Image 1: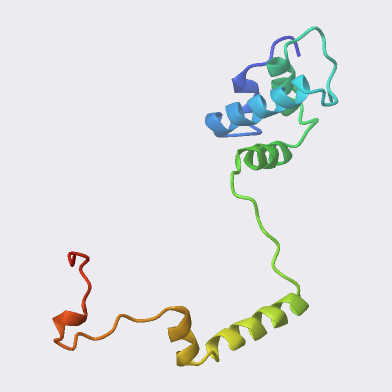
Image 2: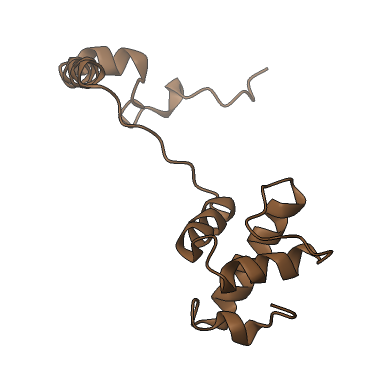
Length: 126
């Protein structure tokens, strides 16, 4: 293939925007040292990436998945094991069984207003 264009790759990846993202991702991989699946022929990485896609030496779906992974910001967290789940359930049950008096000691509620303002200390007394 003498020159490869986007038109040559549209049959494999019908959406031009997807094609550009996929080819750019592959070109970055090639720049980072990924193994080529077509001869280099003194071409730039972007041209090599398009040639690989056009000749289907590398799967467009695989490249698409790689692009998605590189753009993800959210890291999935594994769920805790069953033993850990039991421990968490027990700790929640323990927290639910705390008596109200224990909660009041830890976080005292404000006293109700009894109408006696003399007990309120405003700090102005000399």
